Figure 1 (cartoon, rainbow, N blue to C red):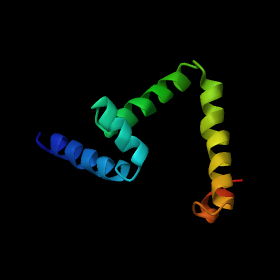
Figure 2 (cartoon, helix red, strand yellow; figure 1 turned 180 degrees about the horizontal axis):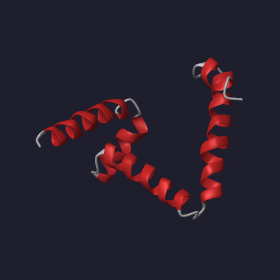
Figure 3 (cartoon, helix red, strand yellow; figure 1 turned 45 degrees about the horizontal axis):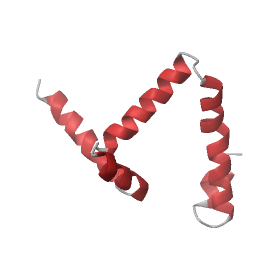
Figure 4 (spheres, one colour; figure 1 turned 30 degrees about the vertical axis):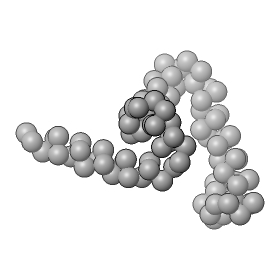
Length: 90
């Protein structure tokens, strides 16, 4: 039964390590005193629930499926990110 908490802690620390690469999340964590893994997990859960119950689902789906990839593609064209990943999206 101790395996479940151990796996939770493992994935929690892995997510924290990955999220520590983003300065904005670090700043938000310092301001709110809420761990960044909980903030991101809560935001993802909220987005899932809003889409699942179709509350602003169309808008959220458009943002995730169209606006963000378009933004990332423009960033790739400007040379700020890896071009191959985002330009093959289209």
